[in-house]
Length: 464
Image (cartoon, rainbow, N blue to C red; front, side, top):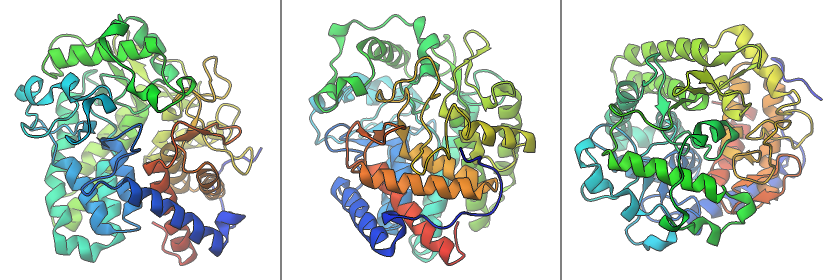
């Protein structure tokens, strides 16, 4: 096993993805996926399984699209922000009215955003969900701008998105610090993006599931049941979403059945605060409020969620006031944070390449979504073990940021190799690379395009 430590970069990716011919073929294939999934104003993750616009998907997709068409990448984010609620939240789904309700559940008639969310400022003319997803958007906006600053400036892209992104962060700071310690909380397992992670098993045990007759599993029409959440889990997801909707999507007041501080969600918020600082500076505005928020969040993240004995950041259940003793890849995502204490970084690097996550153990090793040795590990079921390409993209950035260059190069190679070999799968078995979920998945293609472009930029000394 190769330890991931700070040091010299390894040679550029080898094999098919490392040759100029192989890169061209991979880039062309990834481009075809994004072009096929473009709907005219945004990109669907998958025409079958996910036929609408998803919040954090669009952030990753925009980063990849910026390597094809910066204008289309800008449009991706602007379309999403056009569905923002007046309270600042960015909903996790923006529904396409042309798609039949039976194509996806929960559908617009379940969320009823324009009526149930009226008091919270939901749009009247756009149907959305009422929950949120990880705040990757400001990071995406900064990267989209940097891909073509001239076009961005000419179109006034940053001027348009900056106030909306600031309002989004403002919502999280003002409405979601439910633990009172400075971190944003999530109120549903879908909000941190890792829907059926074993981290949620204990918090979900206290939730009475909605009756199976009260909802339909549209996802099972397009995906293998062995890859998807169970009916019991789905019933609990529906119960939580129903309760939140029936309270008018309010965050304060009655206690929520599920309230968790998630390290990955907050790591993305910190990185996006740094991105907002850079955007503010570009626009001639004061970056210091964003820097101060990033510093405060970093301090709170380490104080509340870092557990030295685990070598990892752990989720925290606010209902019980206890850490959730499960090793999830969300606990590695704080590697994205630039100002972590050195001892924390070193411990995270050891954990990343150790027996629980196995980075560097083989040329194609990807970070699994959950502990390889965990009691609930499942190599095929959604977020209970499979490797996801957007998360590995984030881990690669974190490794590189903290000087673990050889590890970052190895992970970049593994992402490119596995994504191409799997047909741009939604996720893969972390041990075999076997495709799981759906294929031709948008954010998988998007991160491939970004990593290919960054490989070329590194060759030219311009890697960002």
